[in-house]
Amino acid sequence: MKSTVRRYGLYSFLAMIVLFALSWIIGAGLDYGTQEIIGYVSIVVALSFVFFGIKHFRDKENGGSVSFAKALKIGILITLFAAVAFGILDIVYKLINPDFTTEYYDTMVEQVKATVPADQLDAKLAEMESQREIFSNPVFSFLLMAFTVFIIGFIISLLSSLVLQRKKVTS
Image (tube, rainbow, N blue to C red; front, top):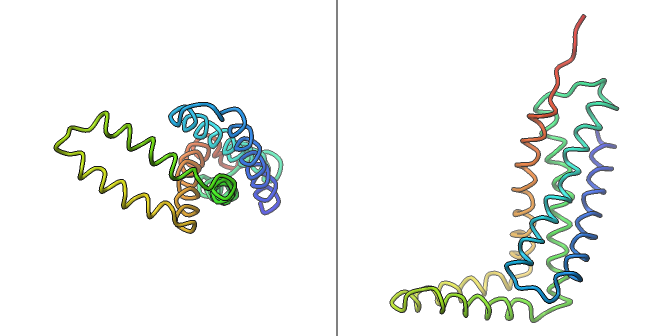
């Protein structure tokens, strides 16, 4: 199991890095909404290694069977690789582009001003300002990005475990 988790975890880690770099290059001129969609698609693609890792373990290392619990454990461990990669990438990106948080915040403020009723605007802007301070903290940012990937990976692990579980055939 350890070799499968390590191998597919590294595949997921590397896929996250490559897809992040590609989305950064390709999405350079796109609006934040489109970039967000590309980012989530990249996360799901990188986490597809969860499915393939569980399947590999079941078919190649465990004689064609795997319990739901064991499959889920493998999936979660592979997910941790991708989650850590994404957290690190977020920190690195903010070092490369230190103006990102300000640019993103300014764009969101403009959207809020255009969509939120005037009587609620000041409260919404105050809420956004407090969130801006939190998101500027590199530790919090790392944890939030890693947790986001972990939640998506947990869901993929659950679904993969349900689909791939297979009991041992006894004669």
